[in-house]
Image (cartoon, rainbow, N blue to C red; front, side):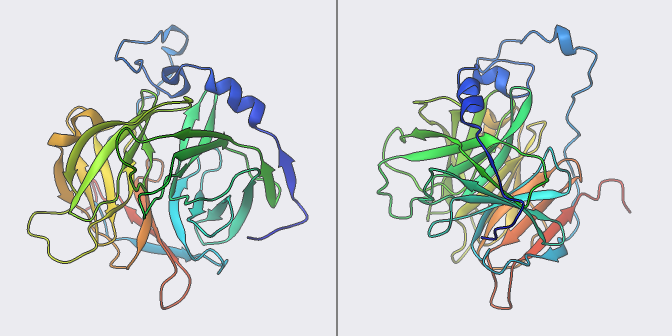
Length: 325
């Protein structure tokens, strides 16, 4: 992990402790509470916050750049920045530093964020989530290949703006336990009603989809459904879910496995995931991809694999081609 003269220290602990006391439904942008009741939107009624429509046609992934820092060879999660358009936040999994790194679309490192007081047990994904009047980066330290961790955790801090070369932040951790046996989870996304979403990594061509209240100490995941992670006629390995992403209007769930990428078209949001319709996507035929995310601003999705035999990780963007002949 690179260091530089522009290194600064930011303490987000107090801010996030305050946010932890804020009801989850007010922390995330939404017109409804977690229980489904309308929220008071009188102060924002004149602001058009409707999410862009989901994409119905996709182009082939195109390489925008290559990760230039060769030490970033185990990228396991990617999320487009909200406060810094054009920046991609990435995280590496276990045996690496507890850090989030900002890359530009060419692959240059633009910011390294050290997570003070945190150990990277197995950080497998991250997401940028509205929290209060700003946005937060949520890191899912939830990997558990051995199914033997006593607990998992979300590591949360306010999304910074670019400026210094590196920052040290003091995040807030939200440990949790699975309701039954330990699960291996390498994915993270969020709803618009105050919940985080996970899809576990399994070896039987299925995945368990869970939701959990965001920014809530002592929260317990709620299993929504067990769904397929590959078509029934799939043969061979590579069907374990390694990343997911919800489109902002909650109408589609992007799923990445080691083998391929597909969408689940949702009628009624994540709570209807059991009846989602599987739709294949163009995807990069690269082994060991653990990072994928929709980009509603650019209208497409990002994929970054771990380093390849040919060298450092390529950064790939699959564009939405709605309306393009």
